[in-house]
Length: 142
Image (cartoon, rainbow, N blue to C red):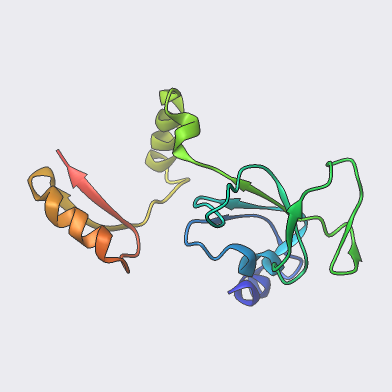
């Protein structure tokens, strides 16, 4: 997957959001100084905070301070950071949801919707999600 990103961005991506638990496999797609945003925890251990990775994405250790230069994969300045983001951080910040809505309405953010179901079919929506393999969100309409 990382190689595919590199065909489009040969110098690497500045940032990448991982919503599909690819985790370390995406590290090679990032440019030095890039950030990998994780929407799901890295593993059963807490994924909060920054991490630093080796070139393969296989090694995980606490990140050095931003001011500290480091080498990744033998290439100076190849510091890659990750940030675990969870909705819990925004539960008391409805303005963030409004901002997301505004971005979607302007076409800046395009959410992937797998299917839309009426609220009365919530049990079916739950079965779809629990079954796995759904690409995109199952949206209930009210």
